[in-house]
Image (tube, rainbow, N blue to C red; front, side, top):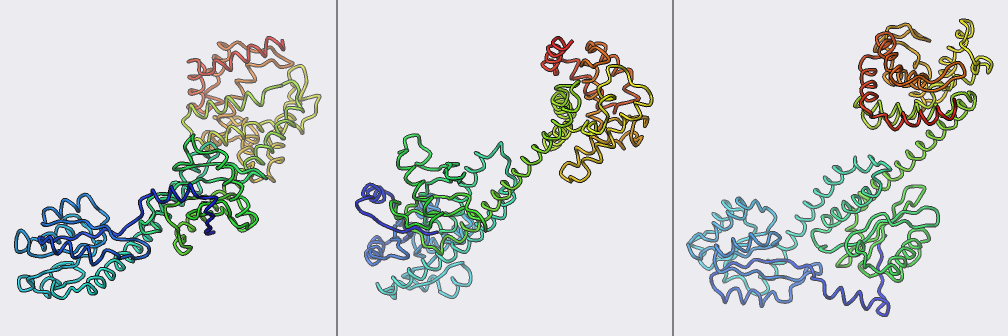
Length: 521
């Protein structure tokens, strides 16, 4: 969405700032050992303008001086080079330096010679990468103008194509990151997106934009949330009232298609828009007016950014729904068995710490930690007189209570997003030697998440009071875990758990057990 408007009364300060900015120019290098030739060239091209940009002249009276100027100015558009200067081929050596040593293929090079016999046109054209060859005697003011205009236009088009290629390449490179958005990195993400937009913006505009500043904001209901800033907008001294005014104007522009009164003429507002929603906007202030056609590359990246944000929002909503489902079912599970208050939260924390200690990646740790909360969901199908019996179970009762694993499997089978929780509910009583239930899985047949929950579930059962027993002391728990480790547990998992237990990494949780046990026994 292009914004173009001007209100002198409202924008006197902005106009003053615009005048102070350095306007973009076309740089021309004039290399000639005759000062008069340089002077006449500058006079004849004094009023030259192309696509709104004037000329900046860079002078050199020798090839040596020209090399020094080229090292300073990497953005020269055109070089008018004499051939015979400090040597008969000084100009030709300079061209070779530009094309081969500097690797500059974009700068347009026009040979101007007063001694064409020393440098025949056909020989020069065939051997050197020059764009035009002129005898000084034929370069009238009009022909000089025509030559410069054609050269600048060619430079402009070549640079535009090259920058478009770079912009597209950059967009392809950064697009995967636009879809790899995590809630904890949201602030950094928005600033990164704004930085990428400005990078592509400059490329897409053929280097004509030297100053860009602005901000990225998103909508949350009726509110506008500032997510990232760049340039003057990120300064603490930036006028808060003015920023809020820009917020309100941009909001009306993108949501209600209002005329953007009150914004600078060089401003652009680009909605972050999907097919169904407007998620926010990018507001940028540039150092010159931008045409709509020049926004194409930026719009491509904006579209990718918006799709990434929409994808994140959908994913985040699904994650919230998943977490809510887990919590709801966990509450049902614990509500059913009032004798194990806090058990689910403790299992969750123990699972998290053991998973981290085992070196699992962040995604696995998060999945396993959440899934562990539903390990006993199947107990909702167990009769209360057995589940809450204040004594050890009979063999017949035990046959009933072990069904909680298959009940849990059945409860969760219709929810694909709870597949990991289903695995935990079904398999957390499987034993390493194959003596567990319900399937009698052995060794690595048991899913890793179930092997982890198996260890922490036994630990919590021993460390907590039950209607039929008192909590065990930590040394006794360690002895018990070590004695049955070969039978019940994955050797690596149990060894890792005992290590973090013995070296005090679970110290804070042990204190919570002590406090809980002293209150409930």
